[in-house]
Length: 515
Image (cartoon, one colour):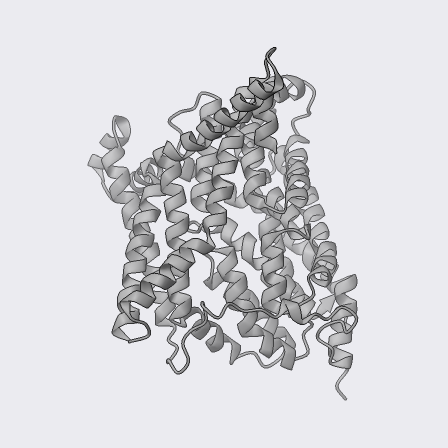
């Protein structure tokens, strides 16, 4: 609808309405084709789909399940079960969907046995899936985020920017993601809860009712039989570790090789002087075409996974290719969102949204408030649409030009302009995830509910309090002081301390006292 309205604004004419609608249709079609015709964008779509195929293969081989079961055996108490669920989120860092779908079914029997509420299990899964995928240097998110950053910097005339380096620079400013991961760990460690989650935890531990009997629904207990490993096969952690390590190692090597071939001028001289110095590696990584490199690494990883499955006789070649294609199909919706986001970005450039907002807000928006405004705006859009990807696609083309203009207008006392723009980029990438956590129409939240066999609205209502609390801390101890130039290495420990103190002294224990 956003693309249609924008295209209609561009193509409306004095002629009749049908002629204008025809022009809108043609314009939208050309923008979608144009977004895919771009080699960078095409590489991103291919990398996302290929990683989807690789995920399906290793899931079919039982690799992620073997990792999960190995950790699950060590969970003897409610605290350890929750902490191991949290740890598994770091192992399955490459995709938030895979994170939810793999961890939930494995840990559910363990947490049920130890009387941990399904609401808490769903929260841990949801609160680690997107935040970890958003922070990971290699995931299904990275290429998309890099493309948004690259395009938005081009809008302010910086055509030779290092998109990957800027992405890495935003990591300390992902306050919501980092503090949410800390919150999950502290709440699991102390076994203290507050708000509706405390009620759910008390019910589960005292009555043994891991789900609310009023809202319990068997509909949420669904698994895709096509993705489940075959009966009778021996699960091995190496069926997941080896393909994932191939993906990571080949991506790292590929970044260097691809980047070296693209370097020129002073950067090439630095490389020739010392090809393996930190500065040379940084320059090479920055010049690399990340979309192509990760696609190549994922393709090789898929081939390795197929070879391993054939060698172990887990599947034949036909089944392997069928599984890979199924995984590709599962991420087609991501490709659709990507194309729509790119098209929307193109429409907004043509309409002049960024220029208008820059003119409107650059002289009136105080420097210190912009990152917070961006974070809140991102969360509202993400809550309304249920998609982090779409929110990033809408906001990123506006944020970088706006932050640049506000920085120039206000003079940014005590703050470097580049760091200020990076801070605002971090606000976009985390605001989108915060809104996604609160939204009942979020795909990741729905998957977390299904994987945990938890009533979906029970999951949302219990998670909402925690998400809002962490977001407030992210603003007060993150985006507001960071806009004044306070460094992240001071703000993050402060945020950790406040999160821990609130859980420790405001949170209430729910375990029965053992005599």
